[in-house]
Length: 289
Image: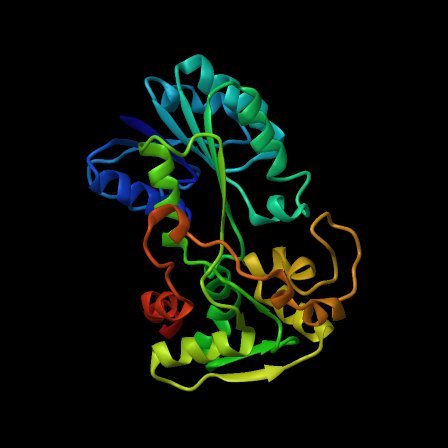
C-alpha cells in the first residue's frame, strides 16, 4: 500500500511515518519543513503546503491512502485532488473538540469534506496533546527548572502522541475502521501540578510550580514566543474555541470528573493507553537541556 502522510514532520505525523515504514508500507511524506527535517532513510519526502493545493499533485500520484492534516480553508480542494488521483481512503487528524461540539469551523469542515467525497474515511480526534506541555513548559524548565501557571488544579487527560499515531496507522492500513470517529484521551485525569511533578520525576530533579495570575501568565507566554505566544489567549481562557472573549476563571472552575470515563486508544488498539508518566520519561531529555 502506498500512503501519503501530510504534516509528516509534526509530532503525530513523524510517528505515523515511522510505524508505516516499520510495517513495510510504501510511505511518502509531505511537509513544509523538507529542508529542515531529517527523515528516516529511504523515505520519499515531498515539499508541499496544504494551504497551496497545487503543491500536492506529484505527492498524490499513485497513492492509496492519505493521512490528512487539518486545513479547513483548502480541505474540499485537497480531498477532490486526492479522489482524482485515485486515493481510496483518508484518515483525518481531527480533534476531540469536534466530539464535544466546541469545534465547528476548524476540524469539523475537514471531516465533512472527507465524508462528502464518498471515499473511505476515519476521523482520529485527540484531546489535549501531552506534547503541548513540552512546548509551553519546556523553555522555563530547561532554563530555571520552574513552571509558572495560574491554574495548578485545572485537570485533563493529556494524550501521548504515539497513541494517536497507533490509531491512525491502524485506520490507514486495516479494514474495520471505515466510517468511525475515534476520540482519544490519556488514561488519567491529572492536574497541572501533578503533571509537573511527573516531569520532575522523569528528570530526577525538582521543578518549582509558581502560581501566577492569568494576566501574568499571558505576558510570560507572549514573551516566550512560538506555540505559547500563538495560543496564549486560548490556553489561558481569555478566549474560547471559536475565538470569542471568555473568562479565565472558568478554566479552573470546570470539573472534568463530571464527564465520566473518557475514551482512549485502548478501545481501538487493544493495548492500555500510555500514561503521562511514560510520556514524561520519553521526553525527559528534551526537558533537560
